[in-house]
Image (cartoon, rainbow, N blue to C red; front, side):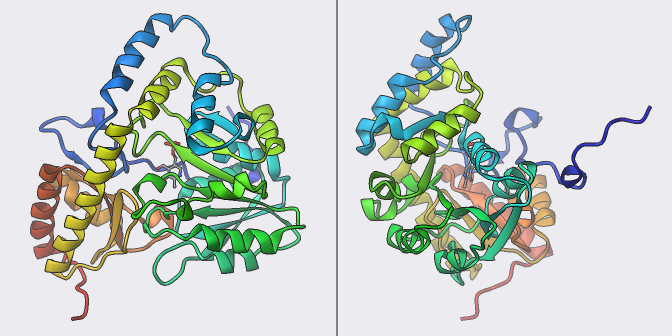
Length: 371
Ligand SMILES: Cc1ncc(COP(=O)(O)O)c(C=O)c1O
C-alpha cells in the first residue's frame, strides 16, 4: 500500500545518530565515553528529589516550571521573564527553528558542529548555511556574521563547540551581534558545555548580552555538568518577546515533573557541581598529557570531551574501540572527518581508553604530531 510521502526536504534527511544507550550493552559494562554525559552522575539531592516527586507522577507538572525558573533567574542575574525551560536544549533548538524560519529562509551554522542545528533548520523548512571553524576549531564569529544574507533569520554559535571543544570569548560574539543590529536576525549561543570552560568567568558567557537586551538567545542544559541527561531538561535565556514566542510554540507540559524536581535540587547543590567540574578539568588535563606523550593530535578543548585525529574514518575507529569495551564517537556526522570524540571520564575509564588506544594504534595507527 503506498504511503503518503513527507515534505520533500525530509526525504533524504538522516536520522540523528546518537551514541549507544547504556542499557543496550550486554556483558561487562563498557566505558561510556561517546555521549558527553557526566561520569560522576547527578547530585544525591537530585536523586532524592526525584524519588519524592515521583509520588505525584499522576499529576501534570507545573507548565511554566516557575520555581526552577525563579532560581535560575536569581543565580544568573536575569528576570524570570527572560527564561524558558525546555525538554533538553534540543527542544529549544527546534522551537527556535520552527518559530523563526519560514520555508526558504536561512540559518547560519558553524561546521563541524552539533548536528541538531541542521536537522532543526531543515525540519522547519529552512536552509542551513555552513561556515567553517577557525583553525583552532572554534566557531568563527567573524565569518558567521559575514555569511548573513537578506534571507538569514538565525545565526548559531556553539561555544565550546561540539565536537571540537574550543570556546569563543563573549566579546567576539558581542562584536558579531552588534554588527548585525538592525537586521532581522537572532543569534543563538549554545552554551551546553559552558560550566567546563577554564577559567570560568563572566567574560566567557553570552548571558551578559541577554542582560543587555541584545537579540541573543543563550542555551544551557542540565544534561552535562549537572548529570541529568536521562531526564531531559535545559533552558533558554533571551529577551522577553523571544521567550514569549518560544513558549507559544512549545508544548505546554514538555518539561516533566521529575526533571523539574531534579534540576532544582541539582542547581542548589553547588558543591557537587564544583566537584564534577574540577574532576572533568583534571581528566581533560591528564588526557592531553597522555595524548602528548603518544604524539596524538587533539583539539584544545574547553568542554567535557576531546576530539582526536584518527588514522581511519571515525566510525571505524569507534567500532575498534567498542570491541575493547570503550565507547567513543566517530565525528563524521558532525562534519569532521577522521576524528573520534572522547568524553572525559573517571580515572578507571580513562585508563581503559588509553589501553584500548595502544591496542588499536598497532593496527590502525593514529596520526602523530610533527615534533
Ligand atoms: C552543543 C550541544 N547543544 C545541545 C545539546 C543538547 O542538550 P540536551 O541534552 O539538553 O538536549 C548537546 C548535547 O549533546 C550539545 O552537544
